[in-house]
Image (cartoon, rainbow, N blue to C red; front, top):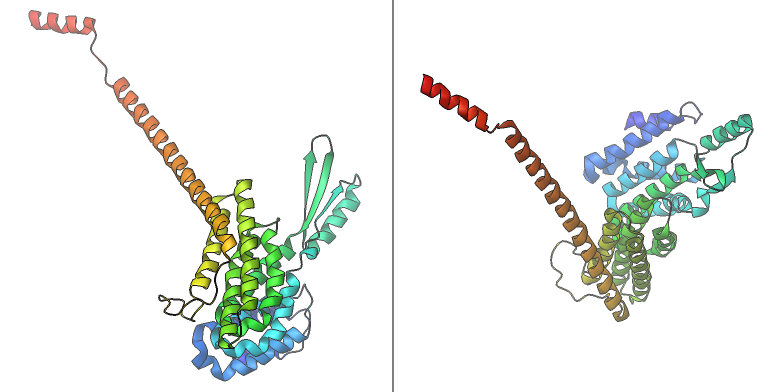
Length: 353
């Protein structure tokens, strides 16, 4: 720790930013490895460091920024509820990354001047943009640009928010509404299935934080019920769209798993125990009007899964049968059946011999 503090205490320059980024990464790894008891003496200093760095508003190209986000969540896992004081500092940069307008997708004509095009592409690549040229029949070549770096940051930010919610649970209640408003629209994110899947899986943690926080504060579950309804409507609608699109089975399974996790939160909403069978009556319940469409959709999802598996098994059986016939045909060809001429020669030899 003294070495890390020394590095992070140096004056920030463009040259030592990568070194400080590695020091921040080491700080988080140490906290996650040694646990709260051994890290307790340095926990306050580490959290103050995180808050001071976040307050400095690091530029987007600063290598310390992503490492700081990862370090913060590792320290949160280590110190638990003590990390609540850092949330006002660490959440705004994460929520900023969830802005879909930063994706900056554009479709333009391909310019004939290669020198200008190459220079523009280099500038775009430096800003995190990726460019593809696609030939469209009857239209011509089109250049598609997309900020893939922003998409990666978005995916990482949702993952970190989910980890905060998993660790802090009821203590995360004051930030649930803001985070949920930013995450729910990303369930429909079209450019990367990883963002859609992670956003869907995060919604159950938001519902859990809401219901536990309200229950601990002895407040009505009105907000939790509203959030539950919004999350379920979004997940059911998106699962139906994914099934109609015929996308990969893993994506469909992820949305079905997200619905299952939300239902499990409702089932266990009467207590904080998430490992054993609940002994308290749930305080959350799914609206009755959702039960029938949700049940039909999940049955259709299960039916498609069975059909895919049966299709895979049928193909495997067909291939095995084909290989079996080829093998037998090969053995028959290798075993030569004696002809009438051969039999005559053998009998003549026996008579003469």
